[in-house]
Length: 409
Image (cartoon, rainbow, N blue to C red; front, side, top):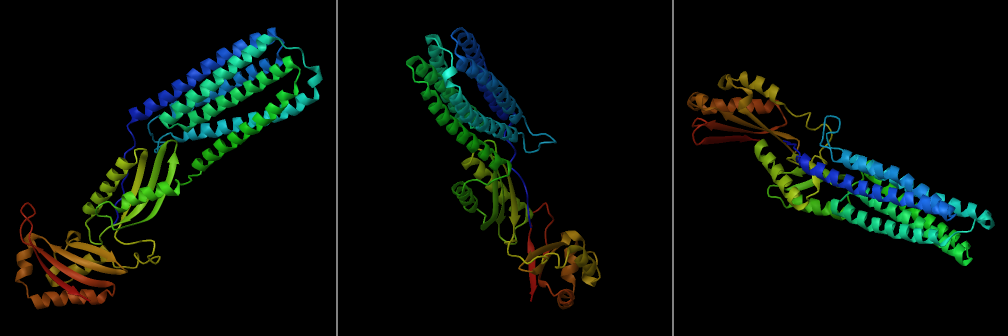
């Protein structure tokens, strides 16, 4: 017996509100970057600070990635559709991967630029104090953006905003390089800019690798941490009605968790009761893990991981039993509704539920002949371990009563 179901996804309004919040944060960052870039260009040109102008161009390039964050936030918050039945959370993951590559490129660019500037250091033009002041203002603004975006990212559990926060810190590091370079130029120690550029370049490149690696792990459906999987497994195992758990699999989609698992219940539970146990598992998981978005719970009557291949297919099926039952005089009126089959341990167990309208005829029959017919049926099917006969005494609308007889191997 198996029952498969899934937890409904979060309400579309909640996902869309989160997506809009991510987009608003990225748009605010874009506006600040644009203002800083314009001021850097104007002051850099007036103060003969080429590094300040270059940093402004770098800031303008960041606006492109900020736009990508905004797009990812809105796209990731869209509700599921026919083409994306699990939602659009992977748009955020993709944007985080791209931002990771951008950070890697920026870091390598700093390393390369430090080497190139070392060769032309003596040709650097004189720089005015206004450029140093602007570099400090930019540094403080970018560092403030880093802390703000990181807080928003953690509050919204948006990895893409955390990546954008680190991108803002890379911008702050760039501004630090400019400030050190300008300050060193004013003090006569221009080599300090190159040392800082090399150090910051390595730091940014390593951050880019880390963000890209995390995004790739999610894109290839890497499971949750073992500790978190253990907590989920414990919540499932302690749910009333669950006898065991096996084959649990997990993955992430942006800030959400997806999982599927096989639970084992009592072997002769009805389909509806087994499904109710699965519903209880759903409710407990949603209560304890709010970021669980979707779960597929497969209900087993035994551990199917240890079952020999093809064992279930080799057992007697319903169609065959119905035909043979109808060939027996006492069961000529048999229908598929009479038959309840249990497949357990490589054997078949047959329960016959005789409806109330057929009960008088069956009870009036010769019991010895009746059991002999059932025994002959069992002899023709070596996998048929037991036959149990249930006779309905009262109609379905009344309180059901049953009389039970069993023939077993």
